[in-house]
Image 1 (cartoon, each protein chain N blue to C red):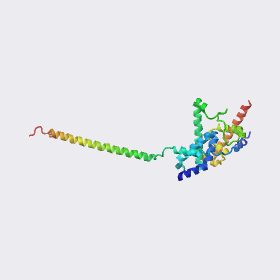
Image 2: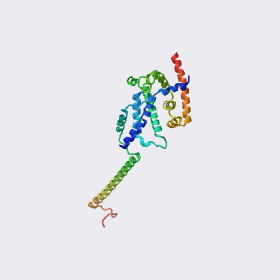
Image 3: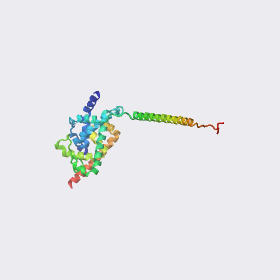
Image 4: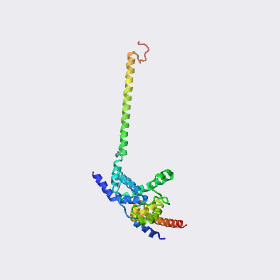
Length: 91
Length: 181
């Protein structure tokens, strides 16, 4: 058996046109695609900015809280006439 | 709008190539239509990834189509291993070699039996040999073009084709022997 001769028979396969409706199906498939996402670099940059902003906010809040607390303590100490002097008696 | 016109043009130029390549691999017009649709949607999604310096549009599209067809066949085979029940609802009928019955619209009725047997054997070849044979013997690509599509050297394609022919000859003889018994 000559395989080349057999393979020549493959030339009898005709080229076929795809059905006409196929382009409409393809367009529908494209429209179903999710909206294009921003590149990964941009997405990471956005997340980074949010993290920095959040850290700054937390930092500021903690500082303010600590400052208020120390003022409150001082106020209370002065109202109760507590002294932080080393002298035992007001001599 | 301009983008849509360009895509339509691309479709008009390459629709036959994609559809016929898919048909040679999967043999069923319905599956070939699904694959053509998926390939063009994929092309649209990744249109910016084509680098003309690396490969021509024809090479790039052929490569995507072939990979997509081979993935489809692999998925189908994997499903078949598990799916006895799904085979009951399958839209295709399998012949004695385990392939879908030939419904290739490019083959006339008189040739169906003879070419069907030959295509059965081609489909039973390893993926690379099968691709080399389909590209060069059915789609009439040159050895150089086939090598570009398969991302290999022309020499490697030649060797794949030779091995494919040897295997086909062996399988053909075995098959004839089986039929005679």
